[in-house]
Picture (cartoon, rainbow, N blue to C red):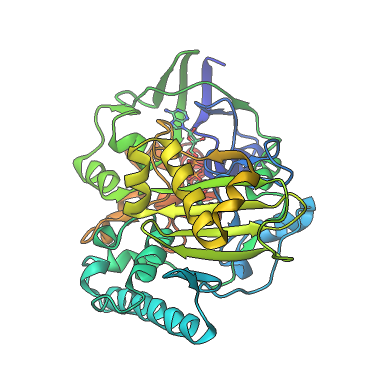
Length: 415
Ligand SMILES: Cc1cc2nc3c(=O)[nH]c(=O)nc-3n(C[C@H](O)[C@H](O)[C@H](O)COP(=O)(O)OP(=O)(O)OC[C@H]3O[C@@H](n4cnc5c(N)ncnc54)[C@H](O)[C@@H]3O)c2cc1C
C-alpha cells in the first residue's frame, strides 16, 4: 500500500466510498485508507445479532424523492418502505397511551416548535433553537425530544439558521435490509485498505504525504472524509496546521449525541402486526421502532442531553433506560422476554466521535468553509460539508462525488 497516487482518500464511509467509485470510473490512481476493520462508517448494518437487520447508524432514506440511494437501492434489489407516517403516534405519557385528540395536540406543538426554529433561521437570525420556541406547553418535552433526534443536539446547541438550511422533502423511507448494507454493497468494488488510520497529513511540500502505521502514502491531493470531531479533537493532524478559519469551522460543527439500543424479545409482547413507532415520554424520552414478528425487535432512539447523560454512565445505562421505557409502556412483565441487546456508542468511538453534524448557534455560516479547497490539494467531504442535506448518508455520498470531481479537475488543470 505505501506508494504514490494521484489522490488519497481518508475514510471509507458513504463519502469515501463514493469518492473512490468516482475516481475509479475516471481511471485515476487512488488509494482509500480506512482506520476501522470494516467499510461504511456510520452506515453499518448488523445482520448477525438478531433475526432482523439492525442499522446502528443510518436507516431512513431521507428526502427519498430526491435521494440518490433510492435508484441505487432499486438497482441492487434493496427494498424500502414508502408509507408516510406522522411523527407523533403511539405516545405514552403520564401512565397511558395518548388518545387521538392528545396526539393531534402533541403533533401541533411539535410542528409549531419546528416552524418557529425554521422561521427564525429563514429570517436570518442565527440563535439557539431554545430561544425561539414558545415556552413549554403540555408537550414541550416531546418537542425538545424531536428537535434533539433531528439534530443530535439539545435545543440550546442548535443553530436556527442551520436548521432552516436543511431541505426536507418529508419522505423518509426505511431500508428494510439495512441502509448500511446498501452503502457497503454499492461501494464493494472500491479497493479499501482497512485498519489503516491516517495520523498526520503533511502538506508542506507540493502534494500531500500521509503517515499511517502501514507506511507513508504520497499523492497529488487528498480527500478527507473523517467526521468533524476527529479533526476538531486532534485525532487527525495537519502539518502545517489548517488555516484558523477552518479549525473554527470544524469545532463549530459538532456531532452531538444520538444513540440506539436494539432489544429482541422471545415472543410478541407488543401486539403490533406492522412496523410502527412508539414514543415513551418518561424521565428519558425514547422513540422506538417496533419491528414485529414471532421474535420482535424494539429499536430505541435517544438523543441530545438525555442520551449524553445516560452515556456518561456507560452503554449499559443506555440499555437500562431503553428497557425501562418499554416496561413503562408495555408492562414490567415484558422484561422476562427480553433477549439479545445491542447498544451503539457512536459518541465514544474515537473514529467517529458523535452522531451527525449540527452547527452551534451563530455558526451556520461556517459550514460553507468546509467546502474550501486548502492549498489546492486538501478537499474535505462527508456529511458535514453539504449545504442543504448535511447530517445524512446521501449528503455524504454526494459530497464524496463532488470532492472527487474537484480533485480530478485539479489534476486536469495541472496538466
Ligand atoms: C444513530 C444514527 C442514526 C442515523 N440515521 C440516519 C438516517 O436514518 N438517514 C441518514 O441519511 N443518515 C443518518 N445518519 C447519518 C449518516 O449515517 C451519516 O451522515 C453518514 O453515514 C456519514 O457518512 P460520512 O462518509 O460522512 O462519514 P462516516 O460514515 O463517519 O465515515 C468516515 C470514516 O472515516 C474513518 N476514519 C476516522 N478517522 C480516520 C483516520 N484517522 N484515518 C482513516 N480513516 C478514518 C471512520 O472509521 C469512518 O469509516 C445517522 C447517524 C447515526 C449515528
